[in-house]
Structures are given as C-alpha cells and as structure tokens.
Amino acid sequence: MDQLNYHHLRYFREVAHEGNLTRAAERLNLSQSALSTQIKQLESRLGQPLFERVGRRLELTEVGRIALDHADRIFETGAELVATLRQTGDTVPPLRVGAASTLSRNFQIRFLAPALAEGSEIVLRSGPDEQLLDGLRGLALDVVLSTEPPRSAVGADFVAHRLATQPVAIHGQPGVDRPASLKTLLETEGFILPTETAIRAGFIALADRLGAAPRIIADVDDMAMVRLLARQGAGLAVAPPVVVADELAAGRLETLPFALDIVGTFYAITIRRSYPHPRLAALVAAATADD
Image 1 (spheres, rainbow, N blue to C red):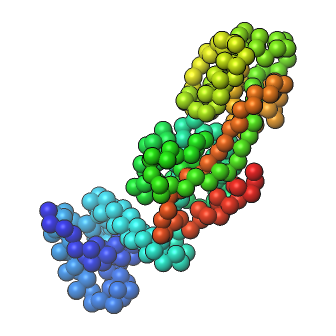
Image 2: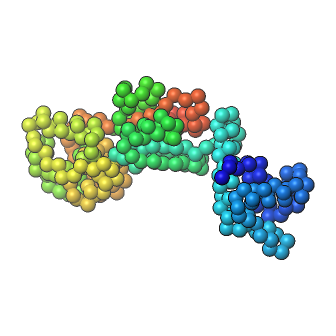
Image 3: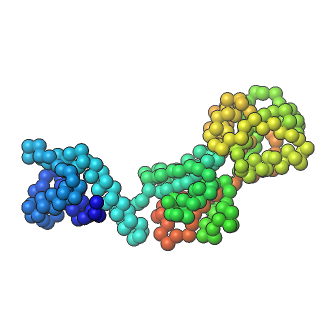
C-alpha cells in the first residue's frame, strides 16, 4: 500500500469527531462535496468504508473506529512534537521514566510525587541498568532512576544527579531475640539481599572484615520482594530505610541496632539534550533538595 495522504486522514478525523459532514466542512472551510471526495479517496486507499449513515448522522464502521484511533494518536503525537521543540504551549509530552529493578518503589514514588500532583502523564519502565541506559541514549526515556551512576565507558553524555543517600541497615520482625554481636548475627540469621548492587557488595565486604560467613537465604532483584520477604519473617532485609518505610511506620519491621557503614545512594541519570522534558529539571531539583 502506498503511503497515506495525511490531509485525507485529517479530514476524516474532523468528520468522525463531528459526526456530520456539513459541520465538518464548515470547520475546515471546504465545500461539502470537496470534503466528501477526500473521504472517498481515503476509503479507496484503505479498501474499506469508514462511515455508514444512520438517519442524519454518520456512524463509524469498525474499520472507521480503528482508523480514528490511529488518526488521533498520529495528530496528538504531532502536537507533542511541536510543543517539545518550542518548549511552549499547554501540550506536555509524557514523562518517560526508567527505574532499575532493584530500586525502592517508595523512592520512585517520592521522586515522581510532584509530577503526579500536577497530573502529569508518566510512563514507567523497569529493568536492568544497561537496558534502561540504552533507552535513555536512544531518547526513548527521559530519565533513569538507579542506585549506581553509569560506568564511564558507557557514554560521556550521561549525567548522574545524586539525589539522596541513606545508611543501609538490617531490618527484621520485632519482638525476636537475636544475638548481641553483629558477627554472630551474620552467621546465625538468614539474610535477604538485593542482587548485584553496591549494597550487596558492601555487605559481603563487611562480613569478610568480621571473619563471618553470612547465611544468605535470598538474592532478590526486586526491592519490593525484599520488603515482603522480611515482613513475612523469611529473613532479615539489608536495605536503606526508605525501602521498608511503610513497615517500619506500621511496626511490622524494626531496624536492628548495628552500624554497617554501608550507604545507599540514589541517582537520577539524564543525558545531555537540546530539548529535555520540560518538567524534568524541577523534579531533579526537588528530589535533591529533599536529601
């Protein structure tokens, strides 16, 4: 099939939303016969009727409804393109956010809270860091939230904004008798760790310095599962307090009194662009100010 004539598609969209050929022709400053000809040419190109007449009103056929859905998205995308390049206007494109799978859901909500309060549309993707950074590099994402800055070899155009730091601690169910020694705790209790993170590496290094062999019962690549497993009593969670903030507030978990000297750091990673998302700078500034 040859490429569509987008003038025809625009005319069809106007008629579909009006439901009346005469009113649509007036809006488009065309004669009714000229507009009817444009619609027939589009139907000929698609090989299917787009309308059927019900009384005095034009009703969309099934093909017409499909075509209208595509037409709306095409012209809405065009409006977003113009608004993005002008950095003006009421049309703001969706904020496309990538979040590392090991990143706390609570932290994500805190970062996005100002945009959610404004009613901004948000598209959230989760996955491994390298995959998300590829999306950022290809402009499929506006920002990536992670616990680690990108490696220098990945790309010099990435900018890692450090948003917050929190001391990592051990969290478990309250009211349980546990060893008073951190070394003994490491060797006798089961631990739940986030997979392949600086937190896990710091925990293993700590155990090595103490000469302890920790019993790791779960390596989890989803922070939500870390908190759920700890809440169910499956083991002790090693995480920043933000990960289990709701459980701590509700008394379902408590933080054990051991200093681990491990810090969890949260980053918003962007890429240098001539036309960044108009809401992004304010979000990063607000999150940094909350640290």
